[in-house]
Length: 417
Image (cartoon, rainbow, N blue to C red; front, side, top):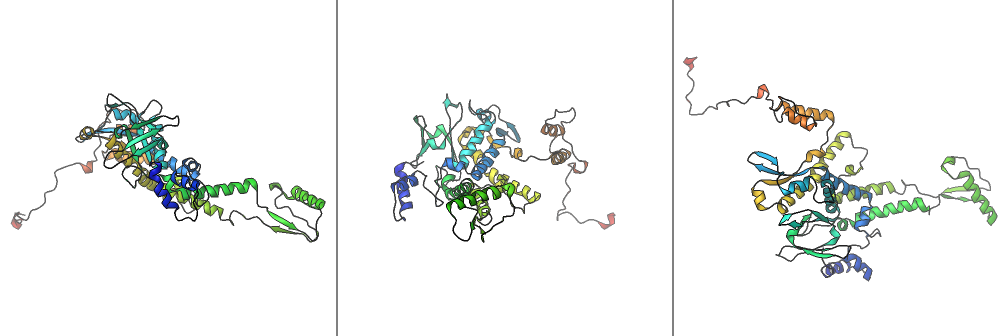
């Protein structure tokens, strides 16, 4: 995060087109809390209160947390879990005394989804990483002066302050415009978030305060104050409440009932709310169906394809980003040369029905891709004797490849037949 003086020129440039600029407007522009066109102030806390934004954040963060993230070592053609490496236990079990691996990955995903940056402090004991602690993005200010490596100024709510070097912090960046920091979603999407907040508030106020009357009763002549009170009480007693809906209204004095209120369909409220959901999902790159929003044209087959699209282009992108960042920052060049790397197991997100799982395992075992005991392990069943060797179909037994004729071979002798 840039300092006040670094942000001031850009903030002033954004406000120069206005006829009048107040000091509060400049303050909000600098510190990311200026009001959007919908009239709402968008901050990280208010963005979390937008149901679509929170749902998108949970799709991203819980998708990351659900997948096992393990450290492997490749030796020739053999790939084995790297139990002996310090990073294996940190990513697979617990990175620090306060969090499990699931909680750590979930919080890491939330920071990336909303702030575009995640900062992990790496305290060391004898040059070895002892634990991994997530720092709130609002606590951290990145200091970067090209071509030096960035440093990190950390200020805690309790008033503590420390400066951490590049090697003490694992900085995971989301989509980035520059080299050293990721783009913040709550700032880029504040107009879409502000629109969602304004629609939600307007809808809630319409129901809670009832500022619009449902209609008015027009009569000939002028009613006295006493007659007005009696008429109002009669309407409340006889025609107010859902249990009296549709009851006939008997009027005299040439009275006429004039409908006044506007329905949600007339006000286009539902369409506006649908648009707001889709707009927030666009910014967070999450398909609307993943947050429970779909149109009536979606079928089971199309919904399945949409979820697969979400797995590939949402979770797949975040997985690759985290894997490459961890390999680069948490593994040394010696570790990478020795074959160490980290990998998410995306199969955890591909939960199949019992029928589909049985079909996949049957194909894998019958074609020798896995042994029958490996298939039993997928079902959490104990191994059985005699099932550790892969099956080989008879019609696919490897043999000597057919000989291809060469133009130098002599032509066949017809008398030899």
